Length: 177
Image 1 (tube, helix red, strand yellow):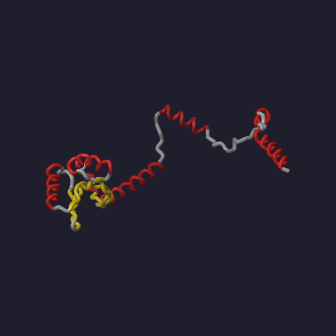
Image 2: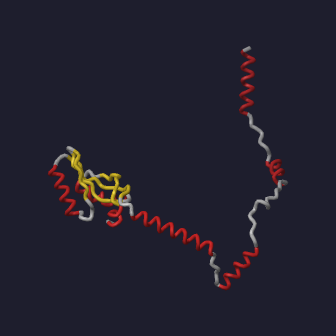
Image 3: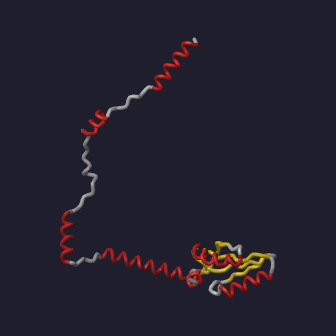
């Protein structure tokens, strides 16, 4: 019994390792060479009369104005004007500020504030006190990259600065550039 089992196992492993037959290229390519299908009904159709009239317009240099597009342009411009007027009413939005000081010492807080007033007068200073911590955040930046430009020079003085996401005054942010 064991001999029969070993014999079957050897035969199956030899069959598994044998080369498999692959279809030859001539049989499959012969079938594809005879294949044809008419797809002309699926292709887009172009009017040749429009092409000749377009060629004649180029030679004269005059282009007719399509009133349908000009009506659409007027509607788009009216919508854009409405959006611009609506955006002028928004004062606050999401942006970034740089936190330059956070600590418990009132004297350190005052020193940091006076340094910022002397060296960075263009930045708006926002101070807060939540017992027992004083915080100073500066600037109104719409983009992280703008805040990062100031962050490098502030970090030289304060060491531990960080950019925080906060509601900012959009008009100040637009005017400070």
